[in-house]
Image (cartoon, rainbow over all chains, first blue to last red; front, side, top):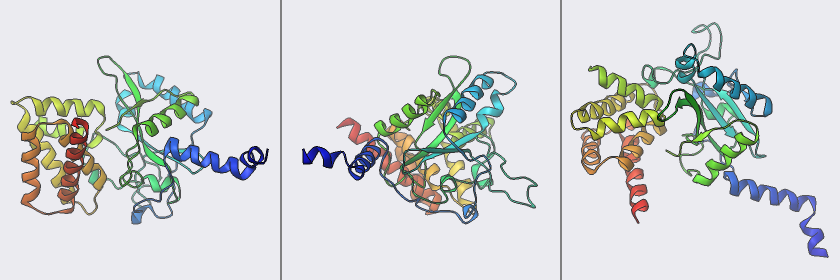
Amino acid sequence: MFVTRYRNSPSQRMLGMIDHLDASFGSLRLPDKVDEWERDRIPVSLSALDAHSADTLRNLEILAQSSLLSSAMRAKNYIWAMLDDGSIRIAVEELALTQPEAPHSGYPRRRGYSHPSEEKKLGHPTLLNAGAARIAGELAFDEKPGEEGLRWVINANSGRYCRQDPPKREQIDSVAARFLELGLTVFVDYD
Amino acid sequence: MAENVVMLMSRLNSFRPSDRDALNKHFRDESTRDDAFRAVKNFVVRWEEADWLEAYSVERIGKWVSKYQGEEVFEELVRWCREKQTAARDAFASGLKKGEREREQDYA
């Protein structure tokens, strides 16, 4: 009787939830570094990944099949990170430009054009105010193998959060499952 | 710079599955392998010339090359990394080592 009550206590349930999140997604870790141009910066596009933002991304996938938009869509990268409670934050990978270099913030970093060293960007720590994440990575469009069109591809490639302790395949799969629960189908890139 | 090399450097920039497929084809085909080598080396050299380094992205490319390309490609890039010590080349060499370890684990 005592054991049952103990296991069901709020603190025990909380510990159980933390254990579950640790196993499913990885334990909390701080970023390896925060670049000087990232300090106190927040991406303009920063959003919580919820049913609404997942629906936006799903609609974007429909639009990305159009030749009018596909090249521009493919050039963009999104970055995401999971917080301690299992919630996910996501943003367009934005350039670190500030005034007077650019009148507005939030310009997307372009992938597949020029060399990445030419464009300093706001990386994963800016999603979390340089705080701890369980796992972090990228979301981007890529060509569907063997057929026309683009599909969402997710990875757990974050130099700041996942370099020292790379996530296991099952943990990346769990993130993809979380995206799916919210309504967005993503393919997993383990490399 | 040859058009093919520029195109492959762009592929290294985004490095999504379809980009890696294109790189893979160039490394596997003897007639285009040199372009693939030049693209990888130029890509790392451009990082050497920059005032910052995204080490993880460079390391990731080294790891992939090591895991999925042949011994000849691996040896050539290890030798190239030893020619000059820079932070970018060190990151690339670190990726080559990580990929080598993963390849050995996969075979074990």
